[in-house]
Length: 51
Image 1 (cartoon, rainbow, N blue to C red):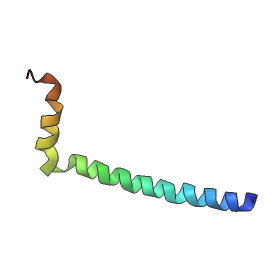
Image 2 (image 1 turned 180 degrees about the vertical axis):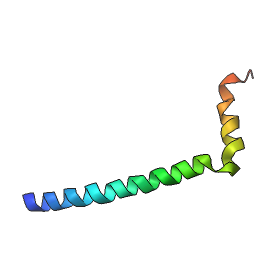
Image 3 (image 1 turned 120 degrees about the vertical axis):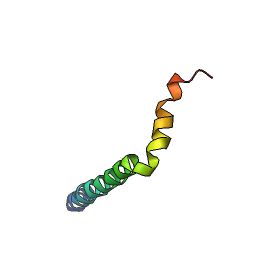
Image 4 (image 1 turned 90 degrees about the vertical axis):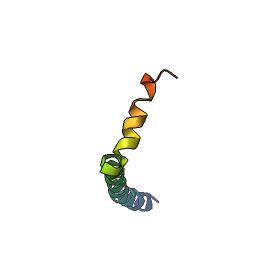
């Protein structure tokens, strides 16, 4: 049982890290993509609107 847990934990740590690094890269690229700038600028101004 302990050997199975260690193997699974090693697999999860390695591939989980890779998965989250790729996910972070995709989210970062989406946030910095020039086409999305207006959408994020509009969202940043929501707290300052008076309506």
